[in-house]
Length: 113
Image 1 (cartoon, rainbow, N blue to C red):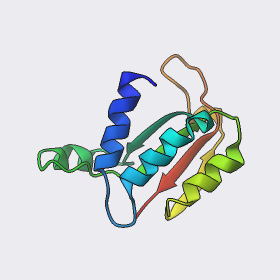
Image 2: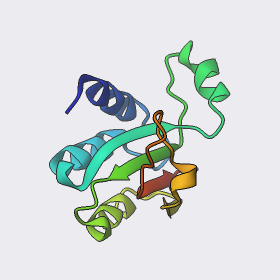
Image 3: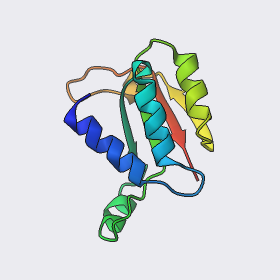
Image 4: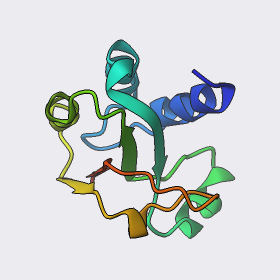
């Protein structure tokens, strides 16, 4: 696991709110690391994240999980156990182009209210 991913997992742990349990999510992700390549938690509108950082609050509500492709059913089942309000897959490579134009297929998107 990269240093950046470790930092992002720490931020996810700190993002606990409403029905989202960041510590549980990170614990499960670490226990099932073969199911995913990388994870990132953010907001569709990152201005709220910027605003609330000064209050030591990581105001995020969307978890993106790039599947390893090993077992997408197991990954989705695990993710649903975290109680998200919405679960969807974005498999359209036009929506998931990486910095070098590389498509990132099989992105699982989880949203909490």
